[in-house]
Length: 227
Image: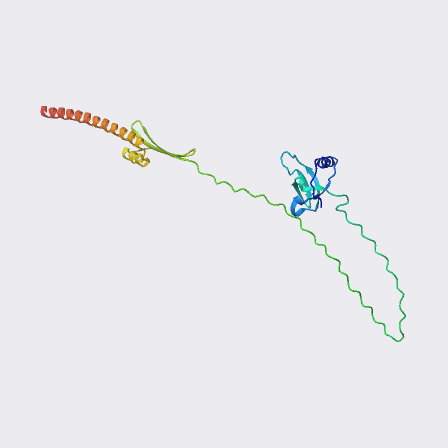
């Protein structure tokens, strides 16, 4: 098992081999964890400035990125199957003379030799990257507007760009109760001043109308007496 990773010269040599159409063999070092000592093939070198894991190694059916410290150049002959020895011809043994008048017994078959089973090591699955939890979407802001325009109080509501309620007229007493809930002295005083001004104007109009009505009633009384 190689203990050192790839040097700068070895990385350059792998890059030249890939350009020539070859896929160099590498062995995983102890820095690769449980994959240490196993063989793979370099299939690509990505940009080392984007990630330190720029050595793409084919291991089984997977192609995974590793850093130069995780792999080393495989020794020559690594991964090749050893040549199977040719079986030696059996040595003929001279048959011993059989005794006379002895019944032939069938030869006992030799016990069957079981071939050792080679357990295939399961390929480690690449670790799944943690999925970031989706951030819940916050609702749009809600705006309720109380306005006083040209002697009328109106209320409107809007959430984000959506209009929930168009401006509609409310009574002055209702407007005063809404402002009282806000508990802001400056706003409440401004509303009270507006209401006081409207009250004074309404009283003046009422006095004027009463005076005009008195004149009309007096004129009507004169007309009745003349008739």
